[in-house]
Length: 117
Image (tube, rainbow, N blue to C red; front, side, top):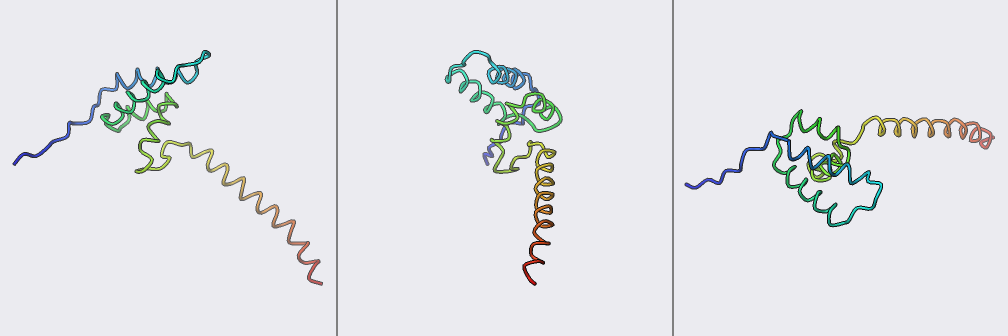
């Protein structure tokens, strides 16, 4: 029986780190960056992410390099949604919307009571 074994996930993040750092530099470059150069870096980073083992090391790398984190999140969207997006911003937006709705409802309540006379 010939069982196909997939290689073990990589735990050495040296190449991934260099690519993430390079992508971050391209993202913040004060001079225009060629599309081919950008695409090449992202393509290589995607290949690295496919082979890298999840864990604390990867999490720290993604925390340090937001552009790479966005690529990683997009690659894994079908499994985990926007798993790396900040919850603080989402929670703040939800609470602000709830407060706005409550304020509007309080203002509308007296008007509704006057109209039912």
